[in-house]
Image (tube, rainbow, N blue to C red):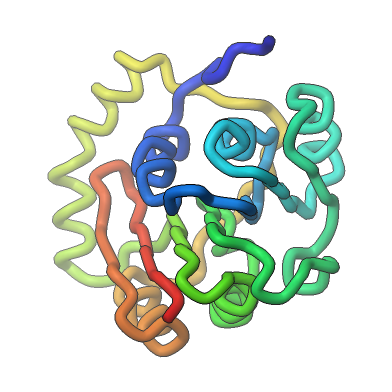
Length: 197
C-alpha cells in the first residue's frame, strides 16, 4: 500500500474540506484535473466508484502507476466521454483555470446526479485593492506554513496563470450554479460548493 499523503502543498491543504463534502453513501465520484491521483485515491475510500480525468498524459500515467483502484482517463474534460448525471460527487482542485470556466462548471453540473454535490477549489488573480491587501497580509503566514509543512509536490504538473479575478469567478459561478456557496481561502485559493436540486 502506497503512502496516502506523500507530500503537502496548498492544493493538498484543501483535501480535508473536499472529503467532508462527500455525500453519505456516495456511489460514484469524479475528480476533474486529477493530476497524480492523490485526491482520487482518497475518494476511493469513501465512494463506490471513482473516476479521475486529466489532460496530461504524464499525470495520468503517474496516477495509474501509483493507484490501482480509481479509474483514470486521459483527455479534455469538456469532451471526454462521461455519463450525464452519472456522479453523486464531482470535485476539482486548481484545474478549472486551465479550461473555459463557464463551460467547465456547466459540464460538472450536467454530470452530477440530482442531489449530488460539486466542490471546486480554484485559483484566481488579484485585481482589486482589497484582493492585493489580503494577499500581502496573508503572505508571511503562507510562507511560514509552506516552510513548516515542507511544501512540495509531484514534478511535471501543468501550470497556467489564472485569467479571472476573484469577483469574476464568483459572478460567473452564480450564473451557472444558482445558490452556490463561495469562500476565499487563506492559501490563495477559493472554493465553490453547490448541491444540485
